[in-house]
Image 1 (cartoon, helix red, strand yellow):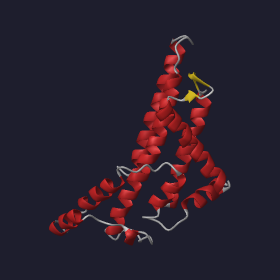
Image 2 (cartoon, helix red, strand yellow):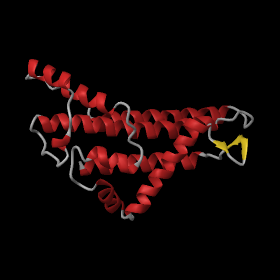
Image 3 (tube, one colour):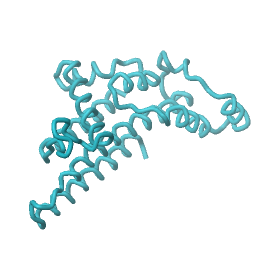
Length: 198
């Protein structure tokens, strides 16, 4: 499956979760708090974005190595472990070692901050991705990056701080279906624009 195909599948899982939220909401009373399903959707759509960046970078590094894609300026800066070089020399017709190497190098990284995303994508393109995404959206680049950062900030509050309201830690920050839909739509749109740019 292509990186974009995988993202679409992951995004659909998030939307399926929203369907569960709506179904449960229609058959239960408001006494049952279903808002954590919405919070899970935010975490999962940001996760799907992060996974897409990992996947598209790894995929296109291999494509570049095979000569199917033009090299970016940073492509030549990719470092390899000697262990991987030995595997490559022993299997000159294979590129699985390279995909494994990039996976290993990036596995501990998160591609959720706009600068980290841009740095990762510089391995496969010289385009200024956030500027191009912003232009295609008809918005200032600062606005697009700020919106993305706010989404990731909310995801981090949910994942690492139980989405607690600091003014009253026993209460969670408000969330609703409209807010979550806007987040999912924005992430999907950014990925669509990245696909077109890459």
